[in-house]
Length: 431
Image 1 (cartoon, rainbow, N blue to C red):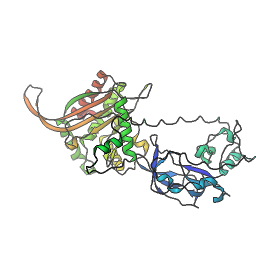
Image 2: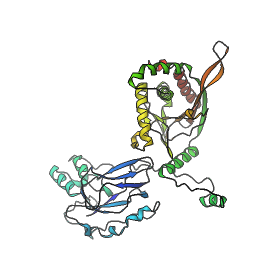
Image 3: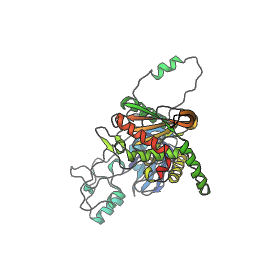
Image 4: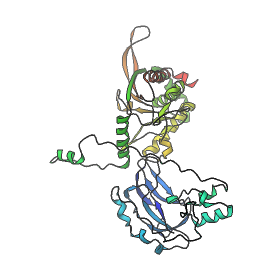
């Protein structure tokens, strides 16, 4: 029977998407793994692959349609021997319907026959099991019971990959827990209508919120409302680091490598998480998770929002490797080409506004991280030296925002002191 192809959830936080471009047209034959469309999520533009074989019978959502909810039918796939006449009621769904922002109605169901064909596989409870013809053939050849296989296709349909990966004696796969949707931002101010009335008669431009801006608004509102932040501040002397950096950059010039101060901050933070392992933790609802690796997220500003790509095992990598990886992640973040696994995870984050001349600021924790380091500019300041004499040094102000559910005050102080010591003694980071 005809099968709906739903709008996929391409990341755990995705609730709706924009169908940017179709890569197939009605009548095209597709196989598992073929590219069907380009989907814009709240963070990136990603390619969507077919999970089954068949013919594209009808496209239900037009290119450029925004706010298409996850699991809404976007096309109909026909099996071998079926035609457009078999689509039935689904064909009545207009392609332009998804263009309206976040429609509330559920997608139309494909009309099912009054009774399942006798040859159709049946589950233990007597309900019909849906499987593609190819999946049925492979299951028969391998001696598999389709009732014991969990389908990964649309609406639980069993597809080729499911039977190829199944074992003849395997028990039914346990249903994967559904990813929790991000908490909606609570209304804490005047409504849209009230604000518009306030500015009646004044000239303004309404700026539509895209998926990224909506996600940022929801997550950061949730963070400030639910995470008990506290803040720790230190001044860090950078003179030794700047001198060491200049020496390294001169030696690395022939390799085309130029280290930034931010590269040293990433490395110092990653090592500090190993030096203070109890602070390398995240909040997980009813428990904390203590991570073994130092996976450090770094905020990257892009047009209309920001990404926090994660540098995994940052403590194990050289400064030049961290620098190259950070440049690559930042470039692809600005083009919105990062995969979800590249900007999700980590236990700690860094937000550096020093290049904009900001002396200091307090950053909002990105859940479920245990903390985030806000980095200001390094500036020349008068200080009292170790000999008691007044001198001038390059000083950088940093603020560590901490989730008190995960990290207590003394532990947070130990982490910040470790970061400070690493930056003020940069040679030791290479030992």
